[in-house]
Image 1 (cartoon, rainbow, N blue to C red):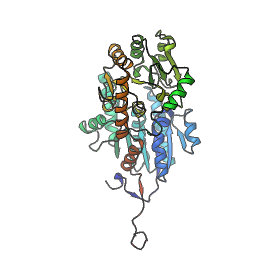
Image 2 (cartoon, rainbow, N blue to C red):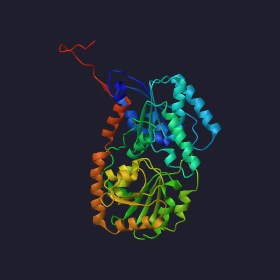
Image 3 (cartoon, rainbow, N blue to C red):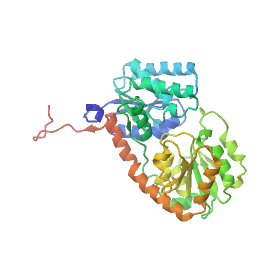
Image 4 (tube, rainbow, N blue to C red):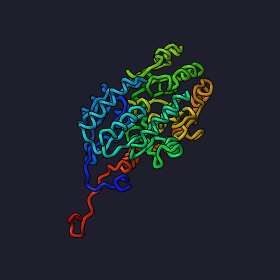
Length: 394
C-alpha cells in the first residue's frame, strides 16, 4: 500500500479529525490528535460546537464547528453536508479521518465532492448492527456500503465489526485497531482511593459499583436501577451526564426514583474519572449496543472487575469468569445476580480485577494502539535514509 502502510518519509500533512459532537472529540480522538501533531502534522478538529471544544482550543488545536444533528432530519443533514463541502474546499486537507455513522457518512461523501486526496474512516459501531427495524438496518447498511466506495482506509475499533466489514463486502481491507487508554493515568491507586472516598464521604469498607457513561436508556440504566434494588449492601455511583443532543427519557430522574436513597450517588460529568474508578470496587456497563467501550478499558486498567452485557464490544474485552461477568442485555435479574455475586465475594473481585488489569495492559495500551493507527493512516514520519557519508539519498 505504500504510504497507506504509514511509511511516509519526512512528509508533513494537514489532517482533519472529524466526529459528531464535542464529547466524542474530547474523549475519543484527543490522544490520536496529539500523537499526529507530535509527528509534525497540522491537525484540525471538526465537530458540532460545544463547551468541551474549549479544552482542545486551549491546547492549541483549531476546531471547526460543523452543524451536525444527532437525529433523523434530512434538512439538518443537508445543511451539515453543505458546510462540510465548504470547509473541506477551504481547508484543503491531505487526509480526512472521519468517525461515527452519520457524521462519517456525510463527511466521506463531502470529501469526495471536495476532492480530498485521502479519506479514512474509523467505525465505532455500525448503525445496521444497532437498529431494531428491518428498514433501519437496511438504511444503515446502504449508508456504510456506499460511503465505503469513497474510503481509502477503513478501520474499526472492534474486531467483530472488522469481520462484518470484510464479510459483508464493505471493505476487503478493513482492520480493527482497537481502543486504548494510558495505563499511567488509569491504574490502581490505594492513596487516591482513600482520598477520593474521604472527599465523597464514603466509608472505606462500603462496596461501590460505578457506571461511567452518558445518561441515556441505551446504556441500560433502567435495568441497572432495578438490579440495584436487589443489592442493599452496595452503593451505585453514576458518572456522566446527558448531552444536549441526546434524546429519550430522563435517566437521572429514573435513577433518583428507584428508591435507592443514599446508596445512589449521581456524580455528574467529572474530569477526575481515574480517581473515581480507583475509589470504586466494581464497574458496570449494561448497554444495549456498543463499539469497543473506552470505559471498560479504563475500569480494567484500574483493576476493577467488569459486569457488562454480552454484546459486540464488551464480549471482546471481558473474559467471563476470569476478568468479569457478562449478562444478557435488557434483563434486570441476571444483572442483579452478577453484581450481587461480586459484592458478596471480595476475593473474587480481587482476582477478576487483577486478571482484567493484566489483559488491559497487554491489549489496550494507548501507546500501542496509537502507534498502529498512525501507521495505518500513513502518519508515522520516518527519517529519510542516509548515505554512509551522512547525506540524504536523492
